[in-house]
Length: 272
DNA sequence: CACAGCTCCTGGCAGC
DNA sequence: TGCTGCCAGGAGCTGT
Image (cartoon, rainbow, N blue to C red):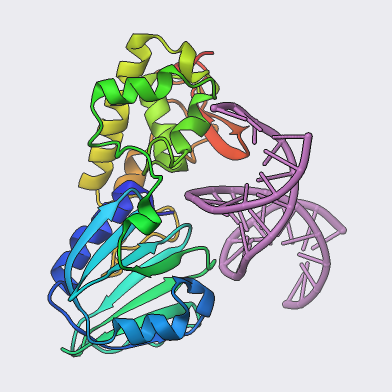
């Protein structure tokens, strides 16, 4: 599942592949993949536009179009973008390729999604979609982060996952960050000591920065636009490692359910 | 504001 | 081997 580091990795790769390319044709094979506008309008509006920038906000890819407009993409669980360079052997479409953009230069960008949770948005103002997102974890100051937690009575894990509060963390990096900071996922946010908050802030930054350097975590589905997997799965301490020894203390990693999400922790390092 | 439950999807897997 | 049925999980939504 693509979280902030995976989306950032995709954005960096796409930038070198599609910036400057103009859309010659587009095809929507599964209409609900396009959240807005209606699919025929989506196709008609895209044709002729040029991609001038590729960015990221939280887990959204943001493609800037000229002369106007933005294409926003949220990959949710299993969404992938696959870039086909001009002249490359066209990959056969496999029934999960729901949207394709064909460029004037001959290349193509395919949106592929097994579980069909991801969505594309073509809008005049990205804020129509992004409004309401919380802070970017890598841009927030320690004070801003502390202020987010201070007044909240919620459990820390569901709070960190709430995109309206902090935007970009998913299940994997939340578990990894809480482990690194030594904070139990059920701790109430407003009961964390200043030292806990500060360790958590630094842990989130370190976990995300390292995951970006490792080009993301591939547990099953995640791929970069050229089809390559990430490497960060080899660096995970607790996520998906129930029963294995904690890298810090050797205690068996536990799997529990928090807010209906599979949650991994070290009962020794993350006490309540 | 907090939170439980439902929905969307389908591959993967357990159980038989 | 093949079938049934459950589960994961991001995010929006409703209801309490």
